[in-house]
Image (cartoon, rainbow, N blue to C red; front, side, top):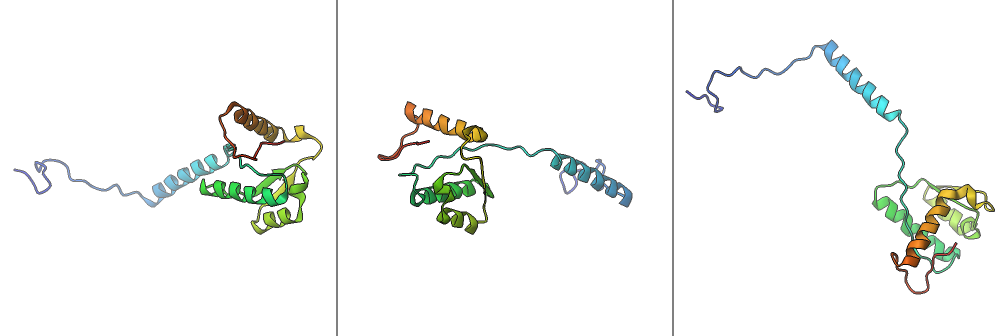
Length: 147
């Protein structure tokens, strides 16, 4: 004869496991230790290279491009908290410094006369130039990757 849940009536009834208070604390402690262990490891950092063509290095062209880049990053779920750049005059302009401050972004600098101090960015710029020259990236007329 079948019982109401489709079984044959001989199966042991389900009894939920009831943890004692000590067992529950120990389980929570282990879970917490595991989480702390994972969080104490260095965060994995991934570099994302984005390019936004600009008409010139003038701040009036750079600011909208930076705005577009920050917007794209935020759409990818990346919170932009710092911009690191060399000491190019368009990035030292009052308008640009104001734009950065309004968005609560910290602006840090490399030594302006030493491209090697910003080696990773220099390598990324060179990669973008190579891809543009090879035809993998297409720019609108009047735009170029300049360094």
